[in-house]
Length: 176
Image (tube, rainbow, N blue to C red; front, side, top):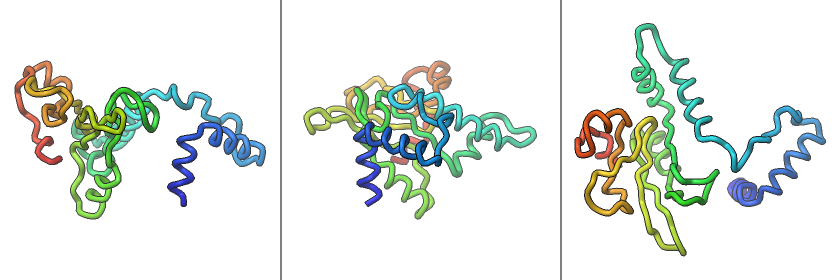
């Protein structure tokens, strides 16, 4: 039941606006807390900033930024979805199974390192890409189709510039 309500809310912005108006009218929500900057203008940088703030909070004396990120990744992983609009749609791959990845992590202790996303046109998959654990990004290996996730590796952006396109220093890609 709750899934149908969420799906309806995501698919119908008017319903969300009516719900917010009802909460304000009932005194359960303040006008100051309304999401005036909501969809489609939510910056993906908000998610990155939140992740970085959690990592900063988790830093211990002597830890560098990467140590803190690794500690945070024990319980919180951020997957950016380039080209996806807010919640769905857009020109990029925007269909993926995050629930199964979460179940594997919680129930079996296998944290996701990358998740395959797909893009459909007319109900047919025409492109796949890996979604990488932030701050890693999907980088084309230089061979094969750019529409196939198998031809991408999750790499740190700085590693790509330092090591060049074909250097495979990414252990995370082995764990689809």
